[in-house]
Length: 199
Figure 1 (spheres, rainbow, N blue to C red):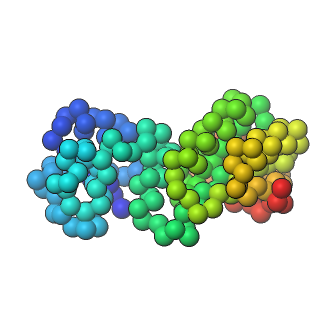
Figure 2 (tube, rainbow, N blue to C red):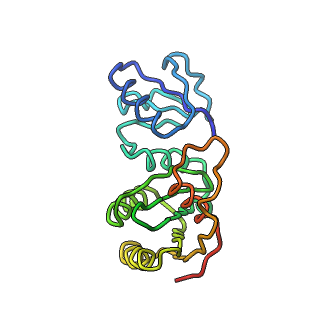
Figure 3 (cartoon, rainbow, N blue to C red):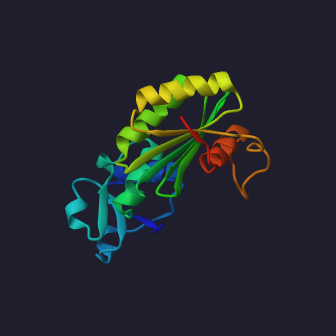
């Protein structure tokens, strides 16, 4: 992923851009608009008033979602062919629901929801906010009742989604190197990349 450049002469906009970028975990550097090279491959975030004066691939912060998951996906989208714009979601059911969201092979983020409704609400924002060529949702089958309820809610909310039920044995074991993911979140990540049975 390219390093994002933050370029604006507005101090308030600069604070807003940097604050939101930190939540996406994307790498960024701050530069003066006057110091931009104007190269076509530069990835720049600026303001709507300044975007036409900036070269490269420019985003206006006002046009990016306030959701870190969606914002990161909007930026990554500019570098993906249509066929690669696949949204992959892993869900670890239970009293605490782990959710992992991937787009074009890159992790957008992981989270824990305290209810199925909250989990689906977050996913609705992601699915609505990102153009995608396919939506794949994989749900761990370790807690059948919770998995069944989530499957029904996903079917209702995302009729075009491909849903798979995954054997989640061993998904909570271990950690990714340097990962801050909780047990539920880590399980969701593992579930997302396991082959399941279509529902």
